Amino acid sequence: MALTGLFLCLFLVVHLAGNLQLLDASPEGRLKFNAYAEFMTSFPLIKVVSYVLYFSILFHAFDGLLLALQNRRARPVRYVKEKPMANRTWYSGQMAVLGTLVLVFLVIHMKSFWYEMHWGGLPKDADGNKDLFTVVNAAFHQGWYVALYVGMMGVLAFHLMHGFQSAFQSLGLNHPRYTPLIKNVGILFAVMVPVLFAMIPVWMFYFNA
Amino acid sequence: MKLTLKIWRQSGPNDKGRMETYPIDGIEEDMSFLEMIDVLNLQLVREGKDPIAFDHDCREGICGMCSMFINGEAHGPGRGITTCQLHMRRFKDGDTIFIEPWRSGSFPVIKDLVVDRGAFDRIQAAGGFVSVNTNGNLVDGNALPIAKDHADTAFDAATCIGCGACVATCPNGSAMLFVAAKVSQLSLLPQGRPEAKQRALAMVEQMDKEGFGNCSNTGACEVECPKEISLEHIARMNREYMAAAMTKE
Ligand code: HEM
Ligand code: SF4
Ligand code: FES
Image 1 (cartoon, rainbow over the protein chains, first blue to last red):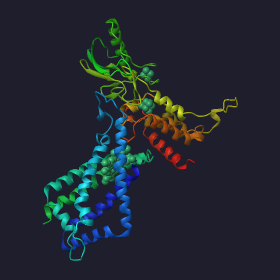
Image 2: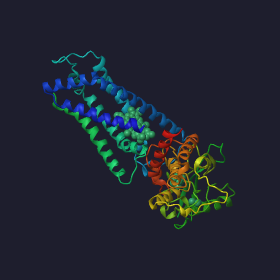
Image 3: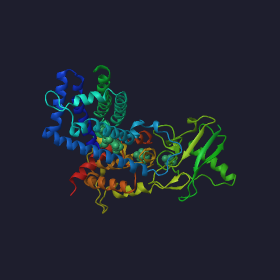
């Protein structure tokens, strides 16, 4: 769980860096983004990493849901009165729900862009690359799609708020000197990454013609 | 003070069980929570009713028997205490108090608030010990040099009283804090090192066999533990376990 979770965190950073190029909507910016997308789908080394990524998502989701199911079974009779907020954050106890929402979003998200890029038969841009920019731009001009995207980034933020530091603890990395630092970096990561992701569709919705 | 108690009643392991309401009067602030139950039981016996079965022994926070889930928290409100160390001044006149047994598939209810914590004994028996030579050639414990910080951390882990509040409070019903305390305590000391690998593997295996849930690091156990056992011990057990699993032959 921890290794795949941290690998997914690393992926988020790379993915975010790529997406930020969408903010440049000038004709050259669009061509550059399309060229980048073409590179990411064709370069052999990236292809290998992308298979590791697909495997990580599936393993992380499958194992996470299996663990959550076992956890439910471990308490067949529930308490009549329970005060969960007294001793833990609400999101630390809802990782499976948050994760499932992220998974649902991932499917929609991959259908919109990843599937289109691979098999969608997109028109070509001036450089002969598939014109993914136009597809993204169109998607992010639909209010409901932007709202869904922003909402789901909120869900991801809470998943990471617990998940980031949790992964270190799972790996046995707990130290009085470094754990507070890891926790703070985790909160920063959990806020910054989804906010930056969410900023892109909002920006495109309001400022890209 | 006057209170309304809502208490789990279950006549035996096969009874379905239900919450029952008991009004009670004349409770003093200085009574412990268990003394308050004693007063209720006296009243029930006088009325010819079945008194409430609950576990208790030392009544001073060292035996770990007094398992009660009070108003939604293990051992009730307050930190670093067991139920016997909880005083009625924590409550107000007119309060309604919910009292339930530990809830875990691995701790079956025997009667009312009494649960069977035999699963902890079986985990201990799987590896929570140091094999010693008993033929008379004993070594003086003080002859072994032990770093002060290790001795202190081992002692902190050793204060676990096996009460089960960690399991009761964990949203996953995980026993990691208890097992980690036992693994840590022994693995930090030179006497425990020779068997550290087998111990970590065997105790975790037994824990899983008993059907406890998986740790997802919510940290609820650490907050409710009467001995304030730290999550650091869980991390240490994770390290011990991973190292043992990767190098076992
Ligand atoms: C970009 C996507 C995701 C990232 C970056 C991510 C990251 C993480 C991290 C770092 C952890 C902590 C692991 C640990 O403590 O050992 C975690 C836990 C968890 N994740 Fe995810 N996750 C993602 C998607 C998902 C999905 C799609 C699901 C399920 C459908 C999911 C379900 C879970 C569950 C149930 C846990 C708690 C498991 C446990 O700690 O035992 N996650 N995630
Ligand atoms: S770790 Fe704490 S809560 Fe768990 S059994 Fe030991 S003393 Fe009780
Ligand atoms: S009765 Fe011994 S700890 Fe409470």
